Amino acid sequence: MIALPERAPGGLIAAITLLFACAYGASLVWLAKPDGRVVLGDALHHYVQLRSAVFDRDLKFTNEYLRIYGPGAGQDSETEWIVKTNATGHIRNLMPVGPAVLWSPLFLLATAGVWIANLFGAGYPLDGYGRLFQATAGFSGVIAAGLGAWFAYLAAASLTSRRAAIWATLAIWLASSAVYYSVVSPTYSHAASMLTVSGFWLAFIRTRDRQDLRRYAMLGALAGLAALMRWQDAILLGVPLWEAVRARTGGIAGTAARGIAAVAAAALAFAPQSIVWQRLYGHPLTIPQGSAFMKWGSPALWRILVSDNHGLFSWTPVLLLAAAGVVLLVRANRQIGIPAAAFLVASWYVNASVADWWGGEAFGARRFVACFPVFVLGTAMLFERWSDRPRLLAAATIAFVALNGLLLVQYQTFMHGLRTVAPYPNGFYGLYLARFVVPVDLVRRWLVR
Image 1 (cartoon, rainbow, N blue to C red):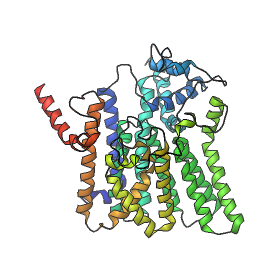
Image 2 (tube, rainbow, N blue to C red):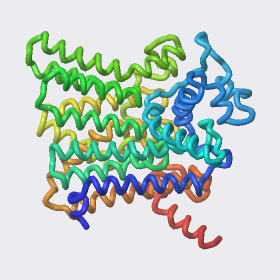
Image 3 (cartoon, rainbow, N blue to C red):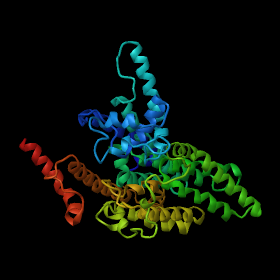
């Protein structure tokens, strides 16, 4: 059993992804919202972009928001923005367009399926609002997260043994915030970010011996795709630019050509977002939330790591192993380790500079999910030192996964309204001890009923 993960890593990741898809599908039935909604929170703003583009062939979202929010929408202070158009005749949308693009294959497949079914009298509304249509976003996210885990594994396995790589992938996937956005809230952009950022690092590592323009164009395009999913991931473009300078081949002209290839490809991949921004705001590049959204001069660098308010290490201590492993990566392979560490530090600074650095009602430090493949690389480097002790790798992974699973049960219990049973994960008791008590109280509550 201990050797199973390394014997069939792809099969194991596929099985976990399938399990997540089944769990997500079951939740849509057993925990169905009375208003029929599936996409909630940030995901709604991605979804209206997709629905409007496919069914209305425009980017005017007022009708989508009014329909989904229901009666009273647009008539109070919280939703009045729905009916307020700007100089371009559009309303705001603060979320990236990338997830909508990623979801489009399953969404279009569902649309075609409903159209065909209706030819035979099914009578399902072909309007893009039904639960079937909305569910395609969630299933697309589950698949994206699974592929992201697979790509991260392949990247790690290019540098370490299969054993270290697969146990590291499982540890970071299942013992961090990534698991929440792989199965509980896969409609958020973090699953999409897992896929694109992991794809970037896999391509970077697999092609590290090449210095041709095609490689730089590919890396630039992958960085642009990652930025399309989450704008912060644009910092990935710094990796091929750093590599172009480090390579020192072809002189100044060669360096410039490689850099231009990367930037041009990134801009092309990011073009859908620029087009949307141009249509909505009249500018191809902007910060929709406004300049106050980023506090570059006063980042919460310490708090975002250790605060009980969604701190990176306080909520997900397995990432302490990952951070230590990145140091080992820098020492073992500077060509990969330095840009990986730089990306991690840059992500830390950017995330700490956001006005709500804690990420709202997130499960942990959710914005660091973009660092998933780098965390896997670091953990794999650390696990490689223990690769001759598979039982230790298994025990460490299982322990961290169990701790995270207990916290997830506590968090979900609180979020579903049982707040007398489960406290919110903050403070010493709420974050570190309550997770062991909540399952017992849930069982006791069930037995009493």
